[in-house]
Image 1 (cartoon, rainbow, N blue to C red):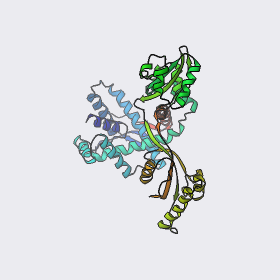
Image 2 (cartoon, rainbow, N blue to C red):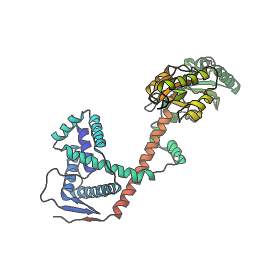
Image 3 (cartoon, one colour):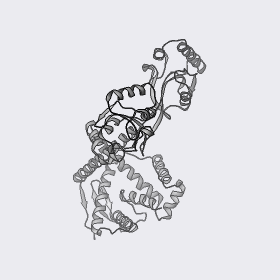
Image 4 (cartoon, rainbow, N blue to C red):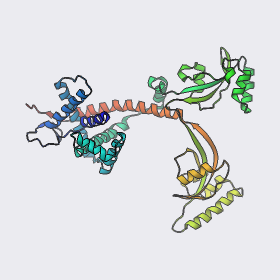
Length: 415
């Protein structure tokens, strides 16, 4: 349950901590613009931090340092909560309930079990709900103030991809095949044979003069950063099964192939390129009439009329009609269940039967299928998130510092 205690601790120190008991002698400790911070809030925040240090067996800073840090944190939180109130930002009970269900699930608990555990630890569930509601309000204020200020240019992003050490750790390991020959003429002949669909591995065994020729040209698994520069540059942003043109080095001419990739961000996805025609029933045109109308449209295509032309004229899908019904490449999970099932079952170049989805009646044609290498896309997404997070944290710190400097704050001298 240590993870759960840490969650509760983080919620507490990042929110206005309220004592569940009514303290008769509680006093105003800080005035913050239009709000106040009570002495009990500071005391509770300090006690929570000290308890956490004890549980982690860490020597805490001095009482004075902890007190000052907690006061400043509560001041910043209060300013953000006031801003949320002025902006009319609300967290609904439904949204809060979903958050609690998610927290419980992350700790392998049902919601009722989670609530019982909170109460068994001396916490009050309703107090914790309000703490989390305030923290969600603060996060929403921060996102509203800071996210729009974070700008990442293409040049900056590319530089980050090429130079940041944290990105290099995301690189997949790549298994290359190599065919090495002495002269360019032989390399070009082999490349022609590859284009004629002869197997790369067989050609490597027959022609390659590299040490790996006997096993089909297979090299060792390596990250691009550990490969010769000529290979690393050639395979940059290339998919599995890509084959290079002849690459010249001091050893001769190399033809390389990406055999496979492995790593945490390596992902391959089956994708379909499909086009369709949709007709939608209306109050004027019944389901049966719509189906019959679409049958006539489908017959036009079966009789040889151009699919794109017919789609432009008859399809009622606002997203694809103007592009000849073309939906582009997509993997599983993007379309309605019935559409996806028909797309998967239909052979390339075949016009499907008419089928129904929640949107209306369709028929489709699959133009092509592929197994898409998504590795580079995932790496770039992760890299963008890392860079955005760094810039977001910097912008947030500056924003909070400015907010604190511009606020009216009076810290009372209490005995």
